[in-house]
Length: 119
Image (cartoon, rainbow, N blue to C red; front, side, top):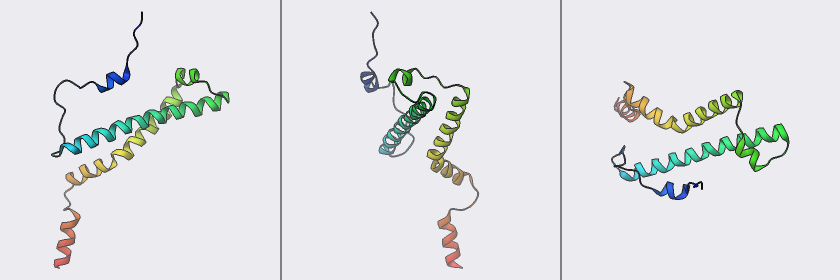
């Protein structure tokens, strides 16, 4: 007899070990964890939507089996990869800008404004 996985139960299991801390405030770690879980869900929905659109273009109709069994060809995979990278880049841009600001030799804008206001 084949057993089926209970995904709801599996998703509720706790990971072994301590969760990594990235920020001084634990609520921020939880918030970002939630946001990135949502990002992953939206990404999966974007792929599913792409599947539906491609099947409609190809066949004009849909069946759930067609959607579940769809395997993108090389061109579709490449398009999805580019789209996903662009999506992730848009989401991560704020983080990237913060890293770039930390790496830059330029003083922060408030310091520049204060200096200019004294002159």
